[in-house]
Image 1 (cartoon, rainbow, N blue to C red):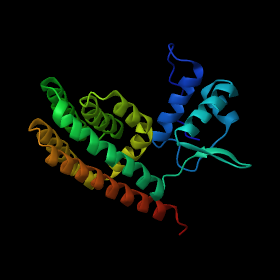
Image 2: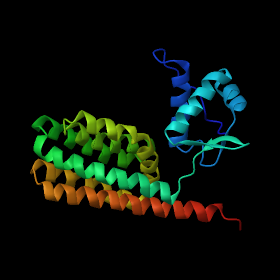
Image 3: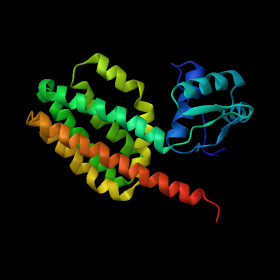
Image 4: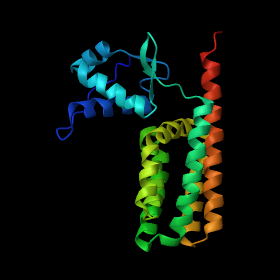
Length: 230
């Protein structure tokens, strides 16, 4: 169990949701590692809460695919497998293609300005070498695109898998080499949307997602090598 785990209180949320958000962020940031067991007693003592909100939070994490239940062993952080990666990115690729197609037709000038600013913020976060800030900035770039579709159902569907996408996005950003192309990839999508060039926008977003998959696979391969006994 990581020593950095602490409860992030929010007076407007039920304690169950506060515990859920705390554990979720710990998983996404890698503080709770893939395969690590989540024991209710230990977590409740570490967070200073009863076992009930911890149990409820773990169930919520299981629904999001971040936690799995192992018979006779209990809950543990879900592994990041190649199969899961491909499943998530297949869905994401289809949704991103659809989003940029629609965005090319509906994005407003104000949203284009917002997208440009989001890309610049990502570029600035790159200079600070802060994984958390990078991931948040990357999320913002894509959320501006989703929002510019003005399709609430599409945004809702994307939101349903956003947390899983976020987890893989963090792995992607750990790959130093891939970061060098991220800014240009973002600007390429922005330019295509500004030009209302649907074909180019789809091409650029596909390049971006495929590059992401390749980088995560490299990261997973490296993780597997490090875990092998020497």
